[in-house]
Image 1: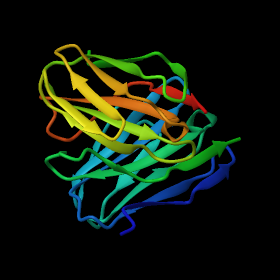
Image 2: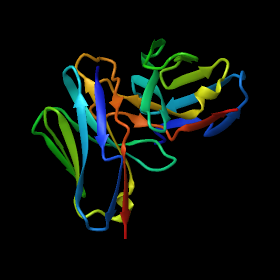
Image 3: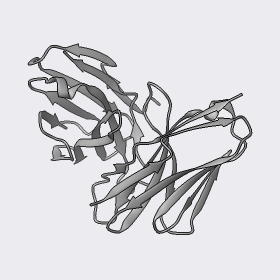
Image 4: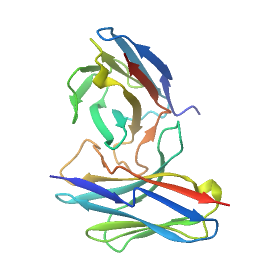
Length: 113
Length: 112
């Protein structure tokens, strides 16, 4: 049972480049989330989805887009990367009752130069 | 504004030296309070969910408690393998989307 899988694990981008972070879960969870983690800032919610075909903005959505075409996948896109988007990105999924909280992926470390 | 504050930021203990981590929260109605453990280079790992004041949960050397304003994570006779960053998060009762508000974490180092 893989849980939540994120790809890639590391990436370096030049300012202005675009990329997509992939997240896949095999637990049949309804809800999925993208967070970023920065030193001294904690985990902050970027976007989330409560089901296939639905997405919504979180706390820090600017500069990011998401899509959830299939229940098991949640994609995070950066259209034009900026140095301020240098961070560690975590995908998470959960059941609708959140009894066991989130299951997190292992993260993507992104550096924008 | 909903907010979570954890203290201390960092804690160094000798193996076997018990202590507590604090999580203070301000939320417009609490649906749940969550504790996670995060090892370097990895994603947070779920530990506990607490729902109401007075509730307690235990797992090995860890015990989490909850009051109306704060939660404590008690670590009894810690071992070096307990070294990690411990994150606290709250979910407001007004949220039906699972959004969690995280504290900045407490980094625990246990020396042998």
